[in-house]
Length: 185
Image (cartoon, rainbow, N blue to C red; front, side, top):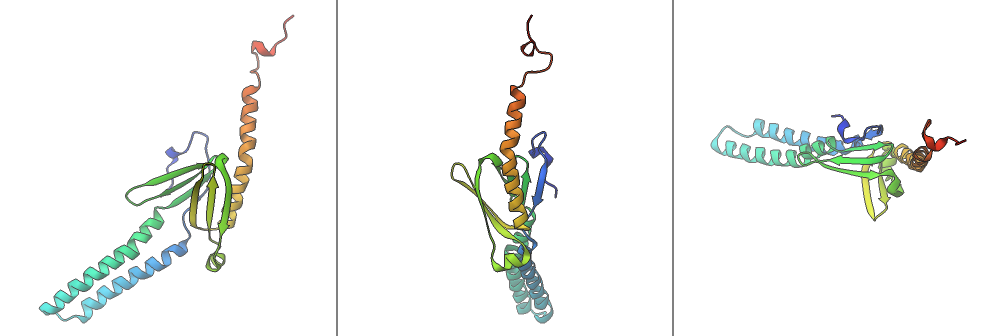
């Protein structure tokens, strides 16, 4: 699923587009496999009597609940979470049915920190905490290549004021051929 281009401004380009690290899907996938194994074991081991059918229905209900709640839902949630860094802002999007999208302009970011556990360091992932003006905080959990994302964010934040200054200079300069730039004789 690609990030929708209609969300971006006219000349805004995507610099970095990531979703949470793949390690977040290991446990839900394992739960899903265990739930399916429990269902198959119930089918094979329970007798074909009325009591066996009732037991199979109970096992099926329990396995479907746990497989859906702790297997399928986290997998879909991981699949529908995206972090996009453009030259102007950071966009965070998540949600399976209800979509939540949050934009954080780069010129409003005043602090960003990265936290890595031992397991995060092994996989190269981490959690980025981004503070902005107005006591707003964004937490990007399980970001792959967290050091690269943090350094790219830093570079874009440093470039943002320079781009704004260039745009202001271009607006202040008179247009060629206009009367304000000519001398009168």
